[in-house]
View 1 (cartoon, rainbow, N blue to C red):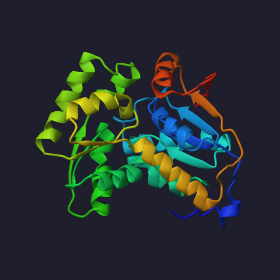
View 2 (view 1 turned 120 degrees about the vertical axis):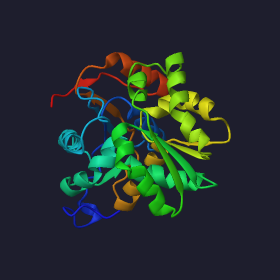
View 3 (view 1 turned 90 degrees about the vertical axis):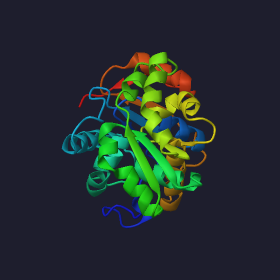
Length: 277
């Protein structure tokens, strides 16, 4: 990835700022957990747009506007890189963010596509995500750009984000919804399934049980963390000899589910800040 136009060389980028991460809600904490594990020296500032979750049913124009507004809040916290931990924003707003923002921006679609192609032995790949992500065709295009001829089957799963936000990870309703959504993909003989929404890794065990042992389930959060590490190193802005801290802010109260996610992901989240838009 090239440096943003605002920077002339790697040394122009700030090295002491946090990794800025945003999502439409709490699901992006799955990416934060991966970042904290892989990059313990880095500070992370997470911003969940809980006042306007979900993004998945909104137009591209609206998603772009929301994404720019949230990114500006991260820049105000001196973020040195922005991770768009929202597949809907990654699919619909990433190009716009890269045009406007003065720091490197990384999204979920690219890293998810790369991981899916690497994992798939038969190049029959399924993708699940929000309505907006699936309608955009972003994952399919990214996968087939890397692997011409790959067979990609996509499925919108609009009920999953609300179920995750309610903390219903192992509920019978969630199991039935997954069965309903995944059945057409299983009939298509996929060998790999991409979790095209950062909320979905919180349902990993339920999804894995639904698809069976023969299908590889790709968690884009882990691959995103690897991409961030590579980017920080290549730009010369990785931190060393520092104990990274995590700050979490929301645009509206979601304290109940936040604590459920904290426990499920093994994160230590202190006082949660509330930021107005």
